[in-house]
Image (tube, rainbow, N blue to C red):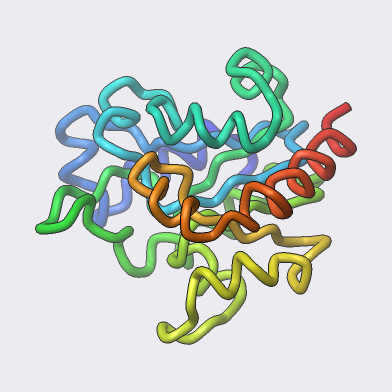
Length: 193
């Protein structure tokens, strides 16, 4: 694919995504050619999908705080790519949002990332992104992966999801805000400024 427009058209034409396309829902991702940081999360939430704006919720507010950037810079700088494991909201299950659909990232990430050749750091938010990109088994423990984030640098930076639902996890793991977030902010600042 040569442009984000042609890639978007191909994604929308894929039979796997036909129900979304028929409902007028576009894939939710962004891949500016100028991007230096790529953010790979699970999938857009319903609020993000309805607004057409990725990370447009309390989780996004927390993520921007962790990154040390404000909302305007995040959305307007052209330095952040957002390529979740699925570009569509997968629906709601018994205990929250359903997981990203299998095979979506394998089918579309390589073509997407080819549009942004200057990515310096990829944030892997949550277990789905970490298992896929770090080639982990399903038994891999998110807490251990995030605790040992330095093992995956300089290419990848694994993080827990910034959802307010994870405040309990953060309270149980104070090292995350004390050690991981300052290192993340330092690396982001070095890349974007």
